[in-house]
Amino acid sequence: MKIFWLSFIAVVVLKSGNYESMEIVGGREARLRPYMALVRTPGKTFCGGTLIKPDWVLTAAECLVDKTTTVDLGIHSIKAIKDKHRQQFRVKKSVPHRKYNYKKKTNNLQLLQLSDKAVLTRAVNVTRFPESFPDIKPGSVCDIAGWGRTSNRNSYNSDKLMEARVTVIDRKVCASKWKPTVAITKGMMCTSGMDEAKGFCNGDAGGPLICGGFLKGVMSFGSILCGVPNGSDVYTLLTKDYMKWINKETKTKL
Image (cartoon, rainbow, N blue to C red; front, side, top):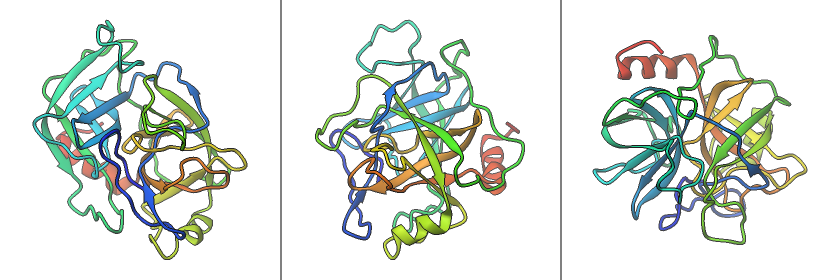
């Protein structure tokens, strides 16, 4: 699926038909998540992101970025313009992964260098990276969060940051659900709400998958109906090779 909000929704096909980007369905209002970033390009895309350094955010390559793009940190409510914790930036430099493939949905990562360094506070802080990058075992429970749509019945995004807990599913099981629309690679991983209607939706792409307190993946795509029971949402899996790319592009070790 794809990652867009309000005025932009990208459509693709998943077995029965189409797929698009998501936000949080079946979740609850989120607790403090100081690494969360809101990436908005008016009239084009609405995405999530993760603060990985004071002046760098990791998001999805499918998020369109231009001179009008803003990145908000430290917010819970989008409408709370005067929130004392809000820090807003322009994008100084965007670095989509050089091997990103729009059709195959591979290498769906993008780095955004902010116009200035964020002031790190209780409400704004960088995420934690794991020291090693093995596959995540099926059955593991992880966290997702975002400002995307919260229901298939409405067309608007959530004002408040929402969160949900999802379960990692076996890559082969996921691949069987997406065949022949998209090939699920070793650079991807999948989660499900299992028997519950839970998952991400339009406006959530680019947001983080947090497992055991560490960043393990970036929301990529899902089915056109968000958060359906026993569905399969797909993420770009954070790997050793991706970490090398991040370190190289940001010119420092994280």
